Length: 108
Image (cartoon, rainbow, N blue to C red; front, side, top):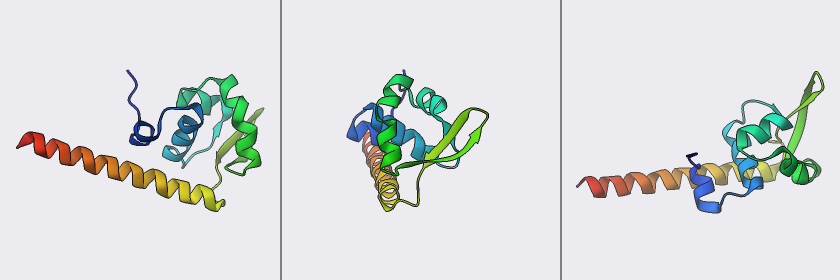
């Protein structure tokens, strides 16, 4: 069984959130749409349904072309993406603190 990140546990497991979750956790690299779909567990045809909107909103940006594949990553020049990243990691931090607190109570 696949484990969900703290963010997905709190806010739900939709295709769009899975994509954003994957791109934030793996923000140091760029990926093709095929890799993004496969690694996030979202079907490629589902990804194509909303990918154009992510590009038009400047949430993701193309970084380079490798062969025929266009490579993408989150657009950290976009202030919304910066705030979303902060929100994502704060949510994760809060969930981890809650889990640690629960384990301490159970251990006592």
